[in-house]
Amino acid sequence: MSNPTYTAIFYLFAAITVFSAAFVVFSRNVIYSAFSLLFTFFGIAALYVFLSADFIAVTQVVVYVGGILVLLLFGVMFTNNIMDTDLKTDVLHAIPGTFLFLGILAALLFTFYTTNGWMPSDTQLQGSVVERIGFETMSRYVLPFEMASILLLAALIGAAFLARYDNGGTNEH
Image (cartoon, rainbow, N blue to C red; front, side, top):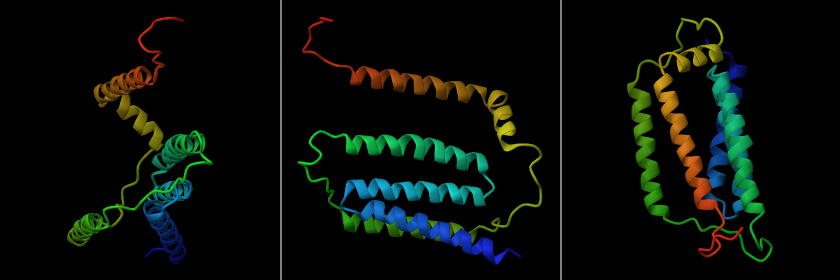
C-alpha cells in the first residue's frame, strides 16, 4: 500500500547512506572520509524524516553536521604542517572486521525476520512532537535530564582542565 515514489526515494537515501558510510570506512584519505561522513549524516537525517521523526532529523543535522563534522574538518584542516604530512590512514584488521560485520548482519537479519511488528501503527500522535518531548523531559524524566546535564558539565570542566596550557609548573601570568 505504499507509494512507489516514496519507496524509491527511501532506497535512494538508504543507498547514499550505506555507500558514503562504506567510503568513510574504506577510504585511505582522512579528508575524503570526513566529507563522505557529511553525506552519511544527511542520509541518516533523511531516513529519520521518512520515519516521521522530524525532531530527531533536525537534531541529527544540527548536532552531527553542524557541530561534530565541522569540528572534525577544522581539526583535520588546521593540523600543523598539513602540507608536509601524508594524511592517509591504513585500513587495518580486515579479517576481524569482516567477522564482526557478518555477525552484526546475521543479528540484524535474525531480528528483521523474527519480528512481526514492522507495520506502521494506526494511532496518530496528537500535538507537536517537540511539545511532547519537552513535556516528558520536564515532568517524568526531569531527574535523568538533570543527571545528563551534570555529566556533560563535568565532561566540559574535565576537557577544559586537560586542554589548559601547561607552562612547566610555574604559575606566572
